[in-house]
Image (cartoon, rainbow over all chains, first blue to last red; front, side, top):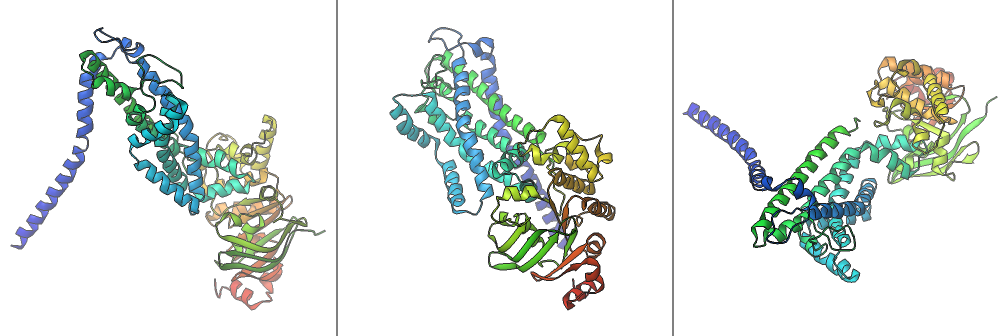
Length: 282
Length: 252
């Protein structure tokens, strides 16, 4: 009876181990399935012409997504330009003054900001930027995306800098360095790998955002580098072309999906490489 | 000829409502080694950190009273100038982990944005590393990161970094408590060398070290300065019973 019970317990324990293993394995299935399906559907449409041409009108074969690709790069570069300096410096403030009242409210606001649906940010950007400026533009799209990047950059910077030993800062202060040089020459360079991975993750996060761009960058069937004019972007192109009734356009959307997916994968892998390579041994 | 460089009068320091340094009066003579000893929590490190205004970096920390260097009030000077005149070496070696040995030595110039000619930098690096007896050990690996040195070497690198700025006073906060005995004796030997050019204030909870390296010794107990005398007097003929108890090991 006793040995039976122990055997039962050993069996249960073994079952639980297997369950945990299977569930961990199951977490990889969605990504693998998505990758498999999109590569299968998109790979056939990707070639040099696809990358350097703008889309053709309905009925004409071929055409590419260069307008969306460059548009996405433009919007993301602008958004980064806005969000990275603000995010990093706000993160510095939070780690330096973690107990101040401003830090409390700033942290709370940033956390809530992270939870705001992207479509709401799009609508706000529409009312605050697109309407006053008189039209859809790349700039207003970038501003909407910058708002989405901010929380990730702020919090990852804060968490990274909090991990640095206080002795490091003391060493710098004891040499008579002013605060801004301590931050720019010592604290940020030592924490650079953590800060950069936050930046990369935030870029990966906004790369696929569609909702805020619907109201701001709007989309453009032609190539445009004008920040005050509407521009195309990959997620917008996918949204518009995938919901169209034309098969040619569906193919473009599949190809664009694959490009977007590869981009995000690449960013994530790059982030891991950066954080390993630039990690400063303390 | 003995002249006072650091002087404090009725100096007090607190963390919030915790009064840790009480009414301290000290005259530190130029080009001497002064040891500050006492049991843990007696306020000796806090007092040291008040001298170059590192104390105020801790939130909630305050201080009152007078502290001067060369008759100039440290607390009306800008902290940056204070720290350029008064260098500091910490308990644990803290070289900048992202900089090479070479850059660590000139960190005070490099990170402060002071431009120097290459030859001048080379001279400062060699001079400072020679002063701390590290030159021969690292001269072939100056471009390696400072974090790969041994603990004793790292600490000497930190001393070189402080020395490179040519301060007048060097503060040492238990500089050897994280080091092994051999490194400790190398660092202690340095104090005698450095005395010729700098005034050294060394916090230690190790009495033997105080006796070995210092000219004068201050004994702190419960935040008060109990006794401040020539080292040979304080160890052979202490006037206060608390000092006597401490150096005879009746409490620690």
